Image (cartoon, rainbow over all chains, first blue to last red; front, side, top):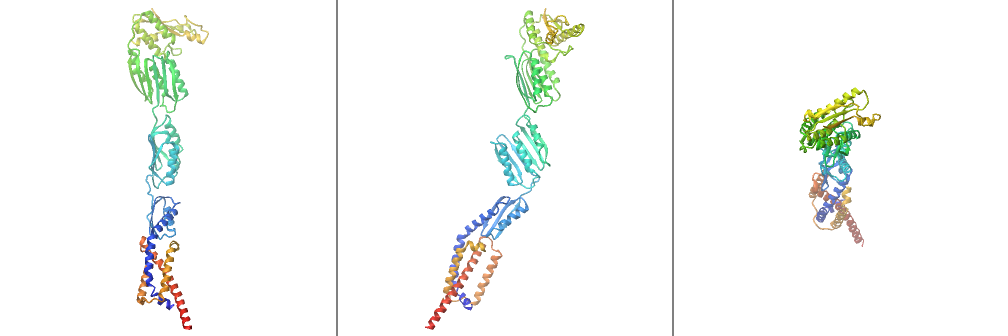
Length: 464
Length: 101
């Protein structure tokens, strides 16, 4: 042992090659060692839920920079790297992901893309939201501008996925979750989209509530076009349901007595309230025009065209606004059709007979009040009467044989008078018209059948 | 430590070889020996370096290089000791044989 100690005094020259060896070892092994530690540290963090992870190795010291989503997760990540064989020190630069207050997430749709913004609580959920959006809207670009933050409300994922499922109903607009408040704005893709959206939102997870739903639907359009050349009335656009569809088509058939009704309507939800009570009077106004267009957009009614005479134009302008329900706006752009050339009384008679051959003037049952469906027909009679200013006309009322004959005579007289009053109100001189009531004394068909009785109830115009 | 040994076994073997050679030579070498007090001084420096390495006072790459140096010294010294002991055995045996003759 003493010898060993004595010899050790002479071991120092070997230190020189040892230092050279050390220099080579340091020169060649440092980078491979650092790479080895970096790859094994990354592998150790594979299962950890972290964001913005970066590992820098200097010698055997590892600097770990990462955003963790919980304190436990943060500590586990540091411990995992510390446990990697060969790591000397872990320079802990991890931090917790900042907590968002309020926690806001949004999905915004425009013409070409859906942009997901705000914050997601976890990277995996962020990926799921993007995937769900792609699945909900195949072919639409999805822009992920979501950050990551803590502080999401419970069941955030369910709420966000529900909203993503509804984003296809928007043409453009934005869904936002702010803590537990859901805000919606924009324009629905289809009529009824707003209602469908509201129904879907009823399934929001507990704790979430709709703070505001300002999604607008596209305008609810109904159109009618009276074409005097084709002798058609074309109905297009939307009606709320099958019943109202039938009511509108039925009213059109009665009001447009000589035109063919072309029905291009489709049934769609989302109609404004009192739709039918606004559209039917508007169709009545259109029936009084020689040519015209009716456009109902939400609660705005726009009617334009040519009335048959001056008074009719004035009546339509002022009358329609009173006839439609409250809250509806009427814009009437009515001009007057140029007066047709005057004709002989015999031609006038022919014209009266032609018109009254196509349709009959209708009254309320058992009364002498003119049915509103006959206004268009009456305007045509007024127009003819203006063309023969010299002709005097007997307006003759007839009834069927039902009921008391004296009462029928009075009723027929009153009905003839109501027609004469209408003509006078239109601006024709009262002295040209003589209302006469014949009751049931001059039937043109059998009173034994309903059809015959209907034919017997009539108004005739006889030019003297 | 186990990691360092596994990672650098080639270099450690080299250091051991140098030590073995140095120990073999040292027995018959006529070079001046390190004086007693200098031995103690070198020992103290070595202890200080070991303490520094164990306490991780030198950060990053320099820290690693220090560890590498110290860990290379271990097989070197072991090699020296074994080399010297073997040479001493050989020398003693040959001296015995010569004196017997």
